[in-house]
Length: 227
Image: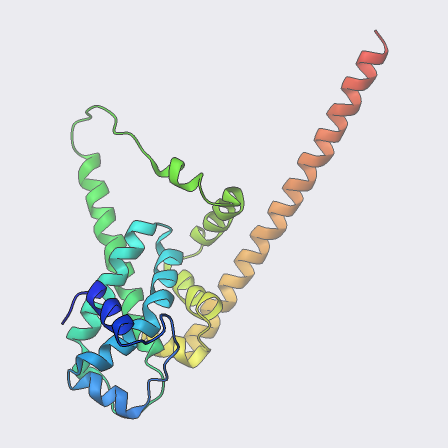
């Protein structure tokens, strides 16, 4: 299979608009299953951005999301023979692969971190993540979202990301994750309740800080006037 940069370039050379949404109909499904590289290019062009966005939401890391993107389409090409000729969009199938890839990368990262923790301490390595995050608009808001999302269990994160952020319905999310539709509904319900609770707690904390700040300002003003 051609490289991802070659896939992008070949489509531009043929005059196909980048990001154009292509319906993956039954004939295209069959062509991808049979190893048609041009049909796979069409799938890649349609799903490249959704897969990257989904991967970033699950991992919170731009670089890891790029790895997930690459590995997802390598895995999709390897598993293309599993595609049924009948069916609609391949979006749930591709996002399901991306979810599994992100899950595996996180496990590998944890094993790597555990191995590093067992090694003798050396000189500290500079961490440039704060510098990168600082370039993002509304960094505080992004951090709050990541913190709230990180409080969910992994299964809840995956369902929430697929249904809320990637726009899959319950049946499509169930297909992507290989679980029952009822399982998707219950996980999504738990995720929403947890996030709503966290949002309410954050709002109360923010209100308390504002009240305390106003109170301290008044106390300082009274103290200055009494001098």
